Picture (cartoon, rainbow, N blue to C red):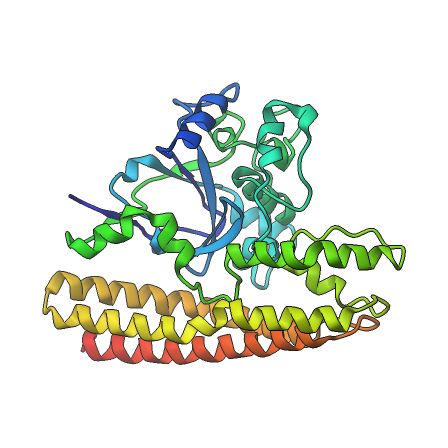
Length: 377
């Protein structure tokens, strides 16, 4: 049985990856989603976007950031990688120079942990249903990223579809500017532990603490459920209309200087985060990664050793791009919230943990480089 891994080295920021699912919901989406002018069999039910630095973003149950190399499958033909032929030139022509290659990451990363837009999914076919605010379905997230960076996805149409009108198979229509890219998967060694990763790739990816100081989707839902309505009610007391739909909304609202009970809510949120934040799992994640590489090398298997070297090289390259972004985010958190907003305990907690994440990632990067040098010698 052969398994294949999405190769981040062959991807470019902005690449759109379509996926054909096999579950009941996927089949239902495929049947319902047949846009006029679709090229081919319109068989895809899901889509995500490569944002660079070895990461993908997708809306599936909610918006999340995942490692691209965790996309492992027995059937690479169920995926189709698409690339915008004018992506770089359009970004440069719009005046973006510095960090242009990370632009789509910067445009979307603030949406992480927002809920899935089920209403919007059905609203595509039944417009009278409308769409839920501050939430996304898969193709809506991808199209929104392109809209924010000013790169059109379609041409020759009477009007550009709004992100909420774009479905997975819209990317197969004649008016879509994206073009297929071949050979973006590589074959993995035929080993039993690979099968475990491929058995349920979504569970593997959701349960792995991605080192981006992002909350798990489940924790994000809990925060909104536990604190959202309470803070909405507090904002109503100062005659402000607010609907908390994500942790980011909550952090910003708690910075309102005149928000009643804000210090108490902030302290309670810190206590919740201390118990649930994946930041605490990062040291364990690092140790687990080290042990897994050591165990692989102990097998004295040339194929496994080659895989470890390739993985380390990818991780080093990704972290070289990711660490500066995390450092910028840490600096931004240090200056958040700006006056006249008020910095409370939750903002100080977020700053400390972002700083700890950067330190942990820096240490892991040093270890990766040393191990890569040792085993490549």
